[in-house]
Each structure stands twice: as C-alpha cells, then as structure tokens.
Amino acid sequence: MKSYLNLINNQWVASDTGASFSVDNPATQAVIGQVSAASTAQAMAACDAAAAAQKGWRKLSSVERGQYLHKLAVALDARKEAIGQALALESGKSLEDATFEAVYAAEVTRYHAEWARRIEGEIIPSDSPNENLMLHREPMGVVACLIPFNYPVYTLLRKIAPALITGNTVVVRPSNNTPCSAFESAQAVLDAGLPAGVVNILTMGHAEAQAMCTHPKVAMITLTGGLSAGRRVLDYAKTNIAKSSLELGGKTPAIVAADADLEKAASDIVRSKTTNCGQLCTAVERVYVQHSVHDALVAKLQEKLAARTFGDRAQHPDRMGPLISAEARQGIHAMVEQAMAEGAQLLCGGVMPDGPGYFYPPTLLTQVRQDMAIVQEEVFGPVLCVLPYTDIEHALALANDHQFGLASVLYTEDYRSVMKASNEIEAGELYINRTPADPYQGYHAGWKRSGLGGDDGKHGMLEFTQTRLVIMNY
Image (cartoon, rainbow, N blue to C red; front, side, top):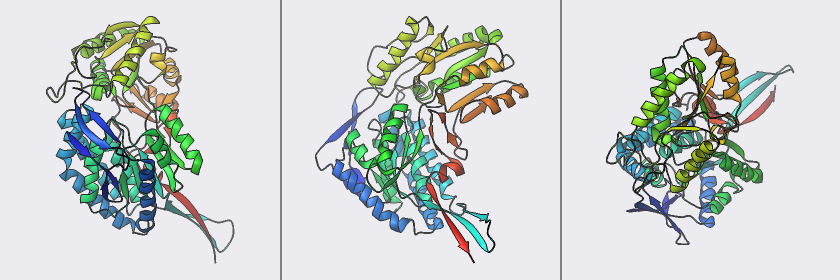
C-alpha cells in the first residue's frame, strides 16, 4: 500500500490535522492507498499560493507557458507506467487502459500547448472616426478544478492544460475514489519544473472543498460531475460571482433507423454501455429503435450483452470491470428493481453478484416507458433501455423529451434524417453511425441540465479567459 501527500506550492505536504482517506480497489475491495486529507487552512494556503504564482505566470509569454506544457507532456509520458498502475488499482481498469489514459492526457496537454500562438483577440470597427475597439483575452486568475473518478487522469489534464496556457493557475481536488493517479501525475508537474504554486493538487472533504471554491481569489470553478454536484458548485460560485464551467449528467439517446447496419449498431452500443462498466457521461443509456427492426435489434443487444462477462481486469483485462463503489452499485440495482416493478421486462443482468468487488452485470430492459425513472435519470452503469419509435419525428421527440442534452447518436443511411437530427437534436454533440468518444479538438458542451460552458478545442480553451475591451481614440 502506498501513501500520498498533497502538493501545495511545489511541496509535498502532510495534513496538519493528521486526517487521511483510504483508497480501495473496487474489483477486490482491498485497500491499496492512503492519502493525506487537506485541512481548510491548507486548502486556503494552496489558493494563496496559486494567487501569488499567477502574477508571474500570466506575465510569461504564451509561448513560454506552452514550453512548460510541452515539458509536462514529456514528464507525463515518462511516468505513464506509474500513473497507469495507480489508476488501474484504484479504478478497476485494466493496466493497458489505465496506461493509455496517461498517454492520452499527455496528448491533450500537447494540444493545448500548441494554442500558445493562437490565442487571439479582435479588432472591432468603431462608430466614431479615429477610434479602434480592441478586445483582449485575459486569464481568469485562480481556477478551482474538481475532477471525477471515471477518467481522472485525462480529465485532470483536460482542465489543467487549457487553464495554464491562458495564464491561469490552478487548485485541484481529485475524486476521493481515485486520488492516487492524480498524485502520480502531480509528480510529473514537479519533474517538468513548473513554477511553484502554478499547480496545486489536494484531497479533501466537502467542507474543505467549499472553502477552496469560495476563497476570495478563486475566479473560476470547473467541474466534471453529476447534477447535484453542479448545483453545489453554483452555490459556491455565488460567493465570488465566480465563472462556472460544468459538465454534468448525460443520458445519451441512440436512435437506430430501419436502414441502419444493425450488427454494427448493436456492437457499438454494447461497447459504449460496458466500457468502464458504463461509467461514462456520454455512454449510450437509452436506445430508440424503429418499430420494424425493434425485435431484431433487441435480440442482437441481448446476445452481445449476455456474452459480456465481468471480472477483475488485473487478471482478465478483456472483461468488464467493476463500478466504483458499493453505493454506486446499490443505487443502480435499486433503479433496475424499480423499473421492473413498474412493468419493465428484464432480458439479461439485473442481479447483485456474490463475491468481492463492486461488479454489476450488463443489463437490458425492454417494455419501458418514457416517463420511467430508468429512462429519465442518469444510471451511470451498464444498464440499457430500449424503446420503439415510428418515424424520425417521433424518435427526435422522444430523444429530446429529457432534462439532459450532452451527447446523442443516430444510426441511419438516410441523409435527410441526418440533416433533420443535426438541426433538431437537443444535445451538445451528435454522432452519426458511431458512439461517443470526445475528440479533444472539438467542443464538449452540454445543453439543458447537462452543464454550462464546456471542454476541449478552441472554445474549451477560451472558457478559461475573460475579455477586456480597449477603446482607443487617436
């Protein structure tokens, strides 16, 4: 078992109260790590360090900041085995998947480093003669970053890298379920030689997180998490009127038309639903299939889901891994039982396995209704619901009848349906004949209760800036 300290102002710091969290392996329930829990005073000290560092960091040219990010990417690559091993143990991922996540985090860091010469303002015509309007892009200041458990290394750099290239400094709270990989990544920050205080990473409880987010110098809070966490962050943001960038819940609909390649659609959907045990905000959660091919698609989904075995991926890397916690598993099972009590038909899965680990089998439900909680609420696990539809108008009405609007999927060969969905789907992303996998040069942003602002690409990078208009009369 390995122990970890918090990174504050480029120093490893133990909790001044002696508090700590234990971290378990969700596949075995064995304790695999111990992390020091920052006190409120230490959370505030990290914010103070970030605020002090930001004065010098913002004055560096963007090219110099980009050079630091390139060094960070190299350091992440050099530590990919250590990061991957920690992530595999704390998340239940295979070592290969966990190590790849570290590599992918390095790639997104390089991507944002290359924005150094592309952060642009604007020259705007004035109504007055002999006058120019010049719109500058400036950093926010100190950014509080709240990281989820499902892809904790990638999301860590997905937030840190654009914040740093635009001149901000950060204080980071990783998930208490998966903090070890964050601290292994924090060592890469030190290896890359980033100035003290630019990146601070601390584990803490909810009270300390609130203190961090409401520190007077925190100008922005960025979160990837659930709807309830987003509401809590909006409460925190009121203190400083801090900018909030929130990626929240998802309930991805997949519309499968009669002319679709059903074999491909079924394989893609099952892979989406069982990757990381369905713990992905863009994983397909509800399938709307044209009535004439409903039974054929359901048969393929049932066969493929039933064949998908689960287990400890350290021993069987090709299997589906565990959920993150006992609480997550119990909540998902309760949702399945409620759906069955309301009339849903269970075709596979839907049971609590015996033995250690937080495993839950791939589960398929039919005869569900649009108003059921299993259709309306995010499950965040390997549970799939299938509903029939008549035509594309009906399918879009069902897909859009929802509180969430993060990602969406359409399987069809009809360009008219593609264009209609492109114009009418109420979601931040639409994937045609494939399932979601966020391209980091795109823009990952949700509609409705799926969030505010977004991540990735030019627009995600610009989330970490504010504007100054200079009116120049000459």
